[in-house]
Image 1 (tube, one colour):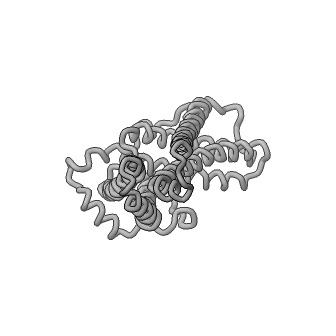
Image 2 (cartoon, one colour; image 1 turned 120 degrees about the vertical axis):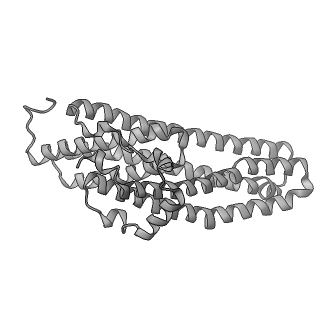
Image 3 (cartoon, rainbow, N blue to C red; image 1 turned 90 degrees about the vertical axis):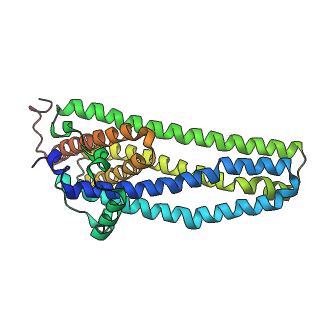
Length: 304
């Protein structure tokens, strides 16, 4: 049975339905976090400036938002994303015929959880149309190895580059807000305590949300760079242990891409293609690197 046939089995479709339902819930929570942390926080600062008599209430509001973000919403989202990622991993394991790596992924998701979440999503034919052909038919074909490696390496590099641009844009916005507020405070000759308590406090959630976005995308970009570097070192230095490190980085990258597919619907098609491209790239790059390290590569047939 091929990959394309296995991914259409009812038990595997149920896995996709379950992980999609969990990711959708996580996405809704993240969206609520974003609303509280950005537009509402900015409006709170404006209200403080226009209606100074409300500054005490606004400060308390800002602190409460931060506390809920750190101790309620973030752990909740992390748990949901972890469950969804493990269910997606189980799908890949079954479809690609891989073994479950409990050390790096954790324990298998409970069948009861999968069934319950899939039921909430719905498993009727019209409800699972978007889950069909999860991986495109082209995944069954093996292109010329060097063309694949070069083109997919470019895709991985491009993804890392886009993530760093996104991180830089968030940093610029946060710095701009900080400079603008500082200029306002100096112009109005605000007392330092009043400035921090009534102007900065409401925006604390904005900076926490922005910082989390920067670290998540920055770490993902670093993992892509480390993956390429590790594979290159394994070939040039002949150190097979580095290939195990590459496996770890590759798994982390897959997990992040799968999370982003569910949380960013506007770019889900592109991200899904990027994930497929990355899997093809890594499979071929890893195989080639391993063969070159252990001396089994046939250089006369490479690229044919």
